[in-house]
Length: 295
Ligand code: AMP
Image (cartoon, rainbow, N blue to C red; front, top):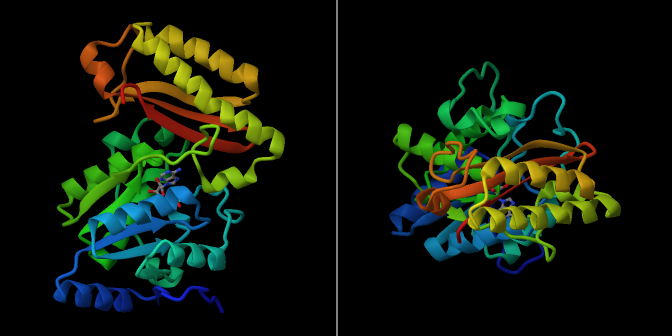
């Protein structure tokens, strides 16, 4: 039995019916509702989205659901960090009005056979090494939005490709919600906060911090007019030198539609729109990050 140690305890909701009743009541009362979907193991990155939700709307709902459909058989579904009691206390402390903890059987009833594919935006970056991933994300986010019917749904730029996939899905399927994005929250050495950072040993945690340094330095060189191909080649080498085992990708792409930029120097227009995207491995732990070239 999970308890929340907080005076203004949020309403805990496990069923779609209860969630809908709650949101309908708030809407009848004239409130705007913002929704923050998560997979738990919460950190300040997640809580910053709750804060943004509270700025946008009168009522805030966060969900915690480790979505099996976005993990491949060889990925870390079984070991994904789970700390429900701690998460509930964090969400209560952050001022959430309601927490939705979907039931797996209700989410994926027997015979479940529908999936959503946002083909174009899912075909590069993480979509190459994780071909199942964006379909799993889009399907569960579509379901969560249908279940919750919020006015706003908040997603982090940490998962930038995911953010664009969700925005495109919402547009293509006419889902009546406004998607709002939140900036990446970082540790003091620049490492983007992630639930998976908990897997890092002390030594690997030090290496992980170098990802931000290397990306910042690539950005500064690119902004001085260096060619993309050469800069990414040198950055790849420096990432290997500081201890990353593998690079899944390191690319410059449009922040609007993920089209690939380079190999030459970026035009002024491209510089305004471009982001650097990286996925690296330390041992088996995969870290992703991205940054805008021009703030
Ligand atoms: P997750 O629990 O990893 O599925 O993430 C839930 C939401 O939190 C997603 O919209 C993520 O993009 C967002 N998020 C995760 N890490 C961060 C971070 N460091 N800064 C901002 N948002 C984040």
